[in-house]
Length: 112
Length: 115
Image (cartoon, rainbow over all chains, first blue to last red; front, top):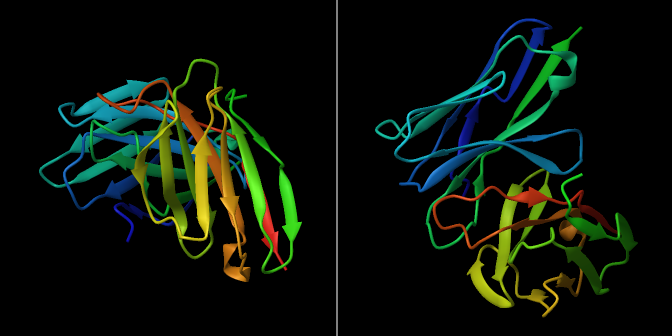
């Protein structure tokens, strides 16, 4: 079964608005990562947050991690049409392997 | 461009056949991972190799096998193919085994269609 569940499954916003996606997981993790996938193409790594970190920023991206609630959120500020893609959270359970368990993803549409 | 190369990009084959998917990792990356993406199962981890040895195994069917060669490229072999094996197969690579948290770089995938 999937480790992560993402919410919402789909999100449609206007350019310039912020987009927030949430991810919940079931077991303890070593780190949590967010990836973007453009329509049937390869996944692109966006950001990694370790289990002892609470918040991380990268450009217009802000990720939070709450290990007590086993949840994470990805915020994309000032969205652009080019941000239209599917976003996946992925958890790494162990430090001994880079194996990732992916959520089902959130499909984001940013309308110009 | 992630630096991970997968061939072929598309593959159409009949049920019962066997295919081989190939992956060249980023220069310097020792770990190679294989994932399967389908509409009903989402992205599933199949198997990981680190420097030629199997490191982790996921929901990989017995009909599937993989290996990593001394030059670090990897191949995923799928045999006795069934319609349900139709999916996107991704290869990813990372520098290390994953200790301390390592991002993975994904190839563009091989789209397998079994008819």
